[in-house]
Length: 94
Image (tube, rainbow, N blue to C red):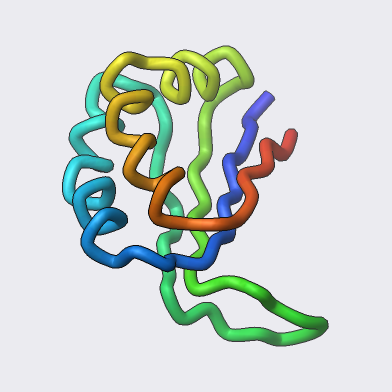
């Protein structure tokens, strides 16, 4: 079953976040995830929004998501994202 990683966050250290972003696609290489959307100005249609950016990635299954998320390269670069942002990452079954 397809799963989606949905991240929404506020960036408070642009330089550190940009280091993460510069290597993000490299960390996706060799994995079966597919970046569907990455937007720093999502259009709010209903309700409230408390972030600067939203990212949506599709994976063929939960195992593929965890393989990518726990890969050495992603763990390495995610330190910059974790330090530079506040927000949430959800895994959604689709």
